[in-house]
Length: 96
Image (cartoon, rainbow, N blue to C red; front, side):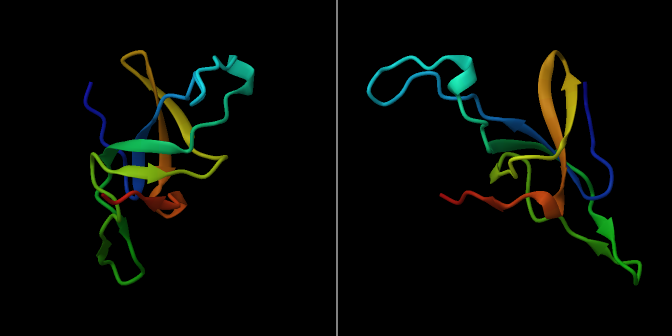
């Protein structure tokens, strides 16, 4: 299924939570922290400002980003969980 977010929305897939500590201890689901890192899967065309000009998106498909702890809209596509965020809600992106 192809999915294209509207306006300034970004579709992301959260990275999997760590299930084992560095010391090798298995973590139960309840003690695993919420994963705030995600990979950008799709981006909308951008938002239109008051003058009618298109504001370009600040992230591109494939980039790794830092998400806020709360927010986003959960979307299920092909039995996988994705989240929709506005471009301005994304806290930052990881650079190599």
